[in-house]
Amino acid sequence: MSPLLEQFILEGRDFLQGIGEKLMALENEPDSVELMTELFRLVHTLKGNSGLFEFPEMTRVLHAGEDLMDSVRDGRVVYSQKLADQLLDAMDFVGLLLDEIEHLGVIDAGHAEQSSELAHGLRALIPVQIKSDARADDAAESTTGAQAAAPIGPVPPAPGIAAWPENADLALWLKGALEFDKNPKQGK
Image (cartoon, rainbow, N blue to C red; front, side, top):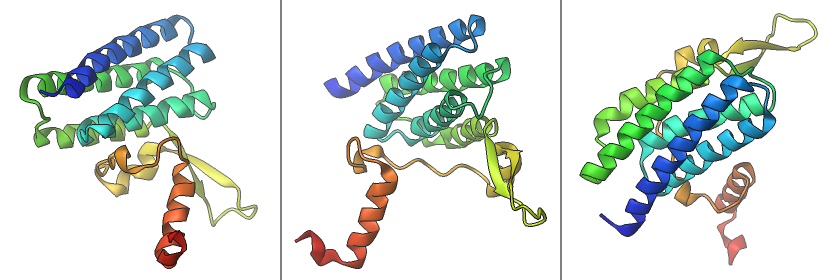
């Protein structure tokens, strides 16, 4: 096992411990912006690290957790015990994957279905805005992520973030990539 992978496993366990501690603290202070921000950062960093090592099953679950924490931070979702329980279940799964990486050096692809189910469950807690043609004022109508995402099926694997430029806004990067595809000579 490479020293970098060993470091990832050690740091991953530290992040999981920190995530658990923040979730426990949030039970007593559910409105704490500071705790929620710290929790978001832990999940975000662990997600990024898992993407660098190309562990899609882990990245998928952590990305969904990150999206959910972001929704709590910006007020679209209210922190609740159900949310905390689902996050704890997801982090238990991530811990199981870390154990597997430590013992086998890889994650068995058989975890893909459970990874998708956990990610879907986390995203189901995030309200989605849907435009309603039936409304005269064309206002956005809110529904839960479960209602909006149900016909979509399993969550596809998250791409490795190693391909994304560091500290770049993905939308701007994609726009630039699309423009480059239209005119590949502009980069020369």
